[in-house]
Length: 239
Image (tube, rainbow, N blue to C red; front, side):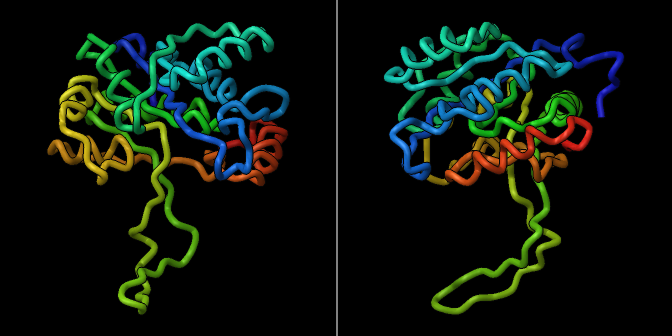
């Protein structure tokens, strides 16, 4: 964990790219899930606030499709949401959205976090640890061990896998800017499922750090109910 008396932002410029390109298809909603209300305000506002309130206090870049930028401006006005952030155009895929944001950052000595807009429950402690780990090792990818038994299907049969070696990847994923900038100069392929896979393809090893089972991704309608229950827990019980 970082030294709470010396936040990493004292040593590095910090940025957070919030990727908000999702649609509402799996939520059975015409409204993209990042705009659905969670405890009275859009999911995306909770996510941005989590980074703003961390000790790392990064400059926030929101990658948002141009067709939703006016809606976002209206929601910010409606909810009196004044946390400073820069909005840039999202791309055709998550890769292209992140690339647009990475290309806008000129300081290659900075630390850059990439985070899903629909993971609003990320804790400040995890955010700060991820920045610290990236400062030390160049990369930091949050993940949790699988709690369930794992089987791999192949040609109609399935094989049990050892779950002790299986990790479920989350965000934030934090990298030194020079590493991320180089990685996103690669041509896009369907194998790029997250930023860690892009960076790994460029030849850089990935460092995992412990995430949290509370750091859920809002994907289905029931996830809103779960997230609200977690938010309503006492702050000291959130990990």
